[in-house]
Length: 220
Image (cartoon, rainbow, N blue to C red; front, side, top):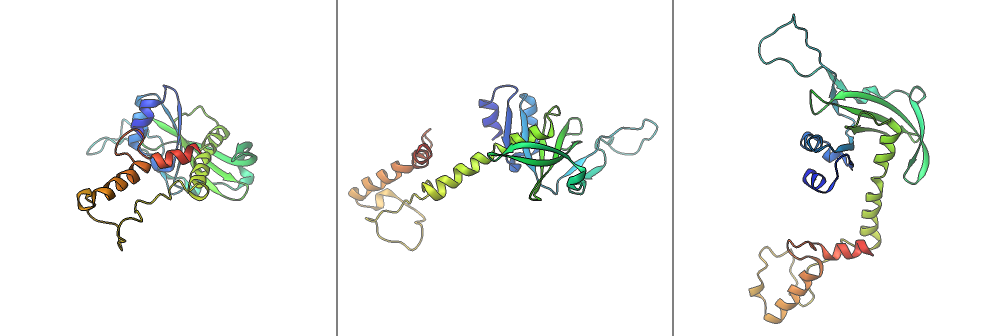
């Protein structure tokens, strides 16, 4: 994912990714190529406070770089004590409650901004961004745009059947399980042509049109 973003995103772009991609390898590459990340992190995330060395205090071993650990979940305050804003989220204007904290997470040298977010229904989530100049509502609204991806997947699966393709052919002998070693030469020549046509319908090796069946559904 980091390779794709670095290759196709222009300098200064904001990348909105899921919590899976909020990790040190992605953030390191983004900073190197001047890209900004907006993502979600787990509520069990532990950040680090800034560390200030005391010259008069010296200990054994490598000098300390990280500050004290900070668990983010306990920082959620009651909604009446949080900042409040109206944000376009999931296609409607909703009230959000948020708190902003600047801590270190993936690097002891570069901090990130955490936005502890609470919705009116009580749902809590922690958002992260590498751009410290963004406001809490801006981060929340940007991450809300990611919901369009989920709607797309749900439409492909439940409405269009974009992932409902099957490899097996009626002309082939029924097998109780997926064949462990599908070799074309083991089938008659007529059946080989049908198998190749079936494969061609939804996948074409490593070509740019890899998942043709899924792409056609997405276009639909």
